[in-house]
Image 1 (cartoon, helix red, strand yellow):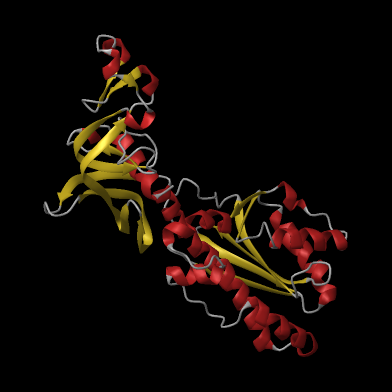
Image 2: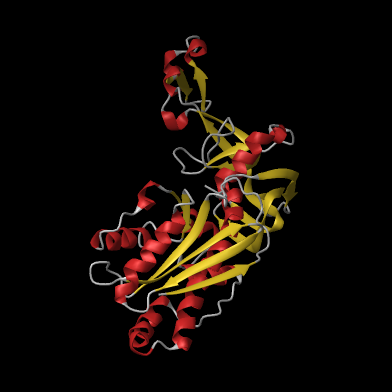
Length: 359
């Protein structure tokens, strides 16, 4: 067995609300000879932990299969000082693999009692917002501009390890250590995705709201909302959907919500309480229609029971703002009327833009 120790310094991380406590947590990653723990085994385990204001790594390399048990025991002894583990997609691969190898080697494994922080599970809900093509660790690191030192993938290194067991070449050995270390240090970098998670959860404060009107020849306008982010994003992002555009850079984010000019309809849900006057093409409450000749009135249908309003209207996913308007009966998109004092309720405004772009 070979052990490698190193010490590193990283830029300090913001105090994200969901950030693990590094006094109780460590990062870990394993390298295996295949995907199945029944036919393959672990040949390298690496951990990264924070101690005395510095980051430290420990890596245990098995030089052959007979040393797998030894590196597992060293790793599990290290774990005794902690209660939380951080990994990337370890819930689906690393942990089941470790547990099965321990079972086969009759090694007691305490990891089932640990709390865990899976970076993959944190980042996966951000895929649409960040327009991520993939969710593997190397792709996510490239999104952040992180450069790796080892040119090989874990799959590439399996054949290298098979050759290494007969030659114990130092060059191959360094590839194993460096690839594993790249994975560990990459996880520290991926923690910066918590800033996007905070944005998605509405961790921002309002700076400015303004209405941008286009010329009278168009039937739309924009509501421009500027917010200050609680946590600066590491890479600028731009996101567009049917409601408008979001652009975030550093500690600022701009939202442009596309609204419509013109006439909209507010439909009454209690239409059975109204009568329709065909000659006047309008509805009237039954408490008043009793004074109208029966030949000039009839019970109103749902699609007839509305009042019209002309003005500026903004889209919404749910009825945050009332009354709600539609272009026609049962139209899928609902709106509300824009007025200058509408956004005096700041928490409601922030919930509104969060619902349009971040949920």
